[in-house]
Figure: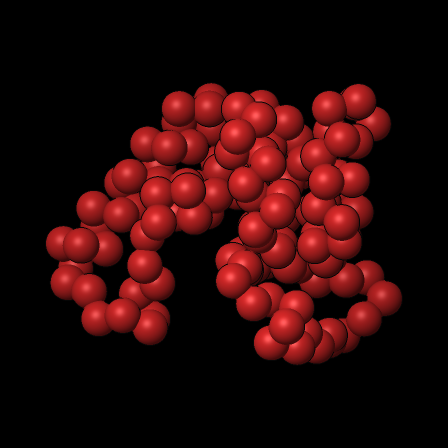
Amino acid sequence: MDEKVGEVYEAFHGKLVGSFPMKMHVCNVLSNMPDEITNFVTGNCWFIGSLDDAWAFTFTGNDLKNQHLIFLSDELLIQDDYQIHHSIAHEIGHVMLNHRNAILLHQTKGEIKKQEKEADDFARTYGF
């Protein structure tokens, strides 16, 4: 494991929940971003994916209080590395750009489209 990737992994303090490949993809993406983004994300975000040895898991409200939750599907993780990394960087973009969740807050199609473009632009800024 690359030293920077290992540092990112350690900084999550257990907030990467999923398969080892999923964890490594997240850490690889963040290792290519500026320290201020990496520090914010490792301190304020959980990444959740499927576990090889568990069908389900539970979090309490205290686990996620004032935190962001990013879910990465098994279907994403079978794509090529570029698509996986772009999707992870895109979701980090939503967090860093303070986008609102369209599920909890009514937004127009135009607002959603604008946020999706901004998140894609964010990902492209870091080569994804």
